[in-house]
Length: 307
Image (tube, rainbow, N blue to C red; front, side):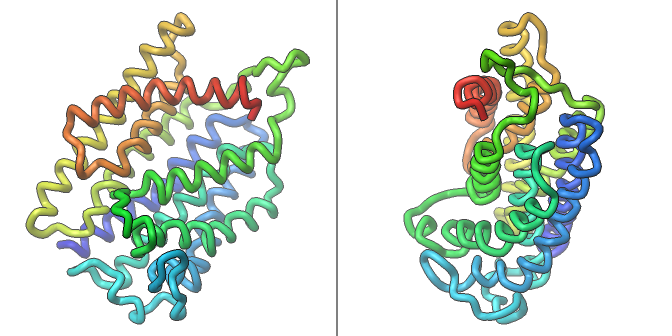
């Protein structure tokens, strides 16, 4: 049962690539659709062999800062897999998580990144960046020794990708036409709210695999835990979405559709680390905070930092 659970989770997390592709394509201009789709496709295709060849070894080798590489991911690393989960099921589960960290960046750097440059970035994050920082928490590294808790990847996956996205966007500078001559930020509408909404629904759906299957077990206490994780994950997303809808309705005199859609993702990211430990009430509070932060954060980065 645990093997089926982990493999089902891996399949759902893989389908997040489709969700990210739809969100990013929908929220950018139509002329850039091909570029965005290719980046999301190549994230997974470049990251898969590199993580197998090198990244998995760095992530799960012995060591406090960087795992001691012992060769290509095979039965040599069998002890890294949780009890009751075959090594290769664990390998594909970790591979799709690596790909998710990589694909976060393409949206922030959309419409102004050369395709070859993005492919090089994708290779580096899958080969070195993600395996090293995820090792600190999930591979027995120094953060794990301190008791750091990240159940499914708010830090390992989403913050790592988010920081890379922030730095990349800062280096590239804003899209042409983003700021007027007085430095005021202007919205650049995406070409399809329908695609953007579809992507958000896909990501919400797949997050049940992202968080739920991170139990890596369907035996004993893990069975009720998986149910709790599903509840807290869903509740945060719903509350964050409602919060942003109301907040933008008050602030802008009408609900902001694209911001409300992004609020669902903000809530999901916020609950990914503590989804196994918080109560439903705490999850709802996290959703309220995330729903407000996504609006305030976007405005701060756009208007104050000019990124």
